[in-house]
Length: 422
Ligand code: GLU
Image (cartoon, rainbow, N blue to C red; front, side, top):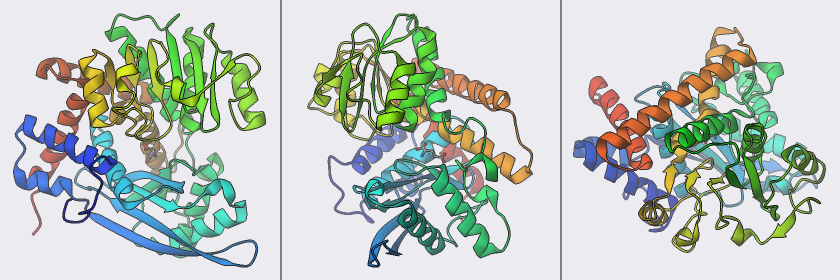
């Protein structure tokens, strides 16, 4: 990795991902050559995306697709549209996808893609043209047996529909298996939209059971109210959990008696934000994560729990619905303070798990009911939680390290079984 990105920041997500990998490698006694293979992504593609804007001008966006590993199956991972997208971040997130797929035992390697853009400032037509050109530039990279993208920050089922259509038009026939998170009308999967949140809810349930905590009456603070955060809120609410604070990019709200989530979902649908919800007080965003609560769920972006606030986090448990929300230094502080942390590669793996179901259905052209999808998701999430929990007990370590030793061990076994070509 140091070879391909020599200037990566020492406090950035890639440095953190490598640190986690090296720590797991040491614990399982991983061969140095295999470690070197896993530190470097298999293939990195950078494309420029000339796009006609509505005012007649031309803008050239930069896009990435990083395929980290393919030893356990085709590459899998989302595409994000965000102004802060950069290569270092995409490589780190691709690596996390490899571990995520391995930890829940689905037959994929990891990938991630992104375009540096601000989708909130682009029209629907501009987004469509940019997506179609991005897909065309990566036409040889994507494919149902090679690399299957999905939604991530700033992308939606509609964007996946354009991607599927562009890929299919280039091939000359419909290829629904090239992408997941598609709209239902073109082969999407029931339950995919809320799958990350649903998976996370199963994990919260198992984590509470393991710690002898009851969900009913426990307090929860949620950072992020996008696709993942809003689904977590909607699905944990009926268990009797009291969601006492919620934040999004615009601000945060607090009500120590618990927020009525049905009303908040309605308010957010109407106004586009959780702020100014009439039945709660405004809260500065920087106070959200450090509020006194039982369960803290960061469900927004990476690097929000840092050295600067980790010693003030007062939750009993942190469940990482976002990717890489906790820096390694902050993770150590949380562990020293006996806070139970369920890592991202386990807690948010419900999304890619249902993506896997969608891909299987697309390949077979045979579709499942919502009940089938949710039941299979529950089985996989519950099994994965206990596998990681048992590994943590056995190694007398934390959940993140245990998830990593399991995942890296599985990928390493695939590598040694296949051997190095030629
Ligand atoms: N973007 C999601 C993630 O980070 C889903 C990836 C997928 O479904 O392929 O897990």
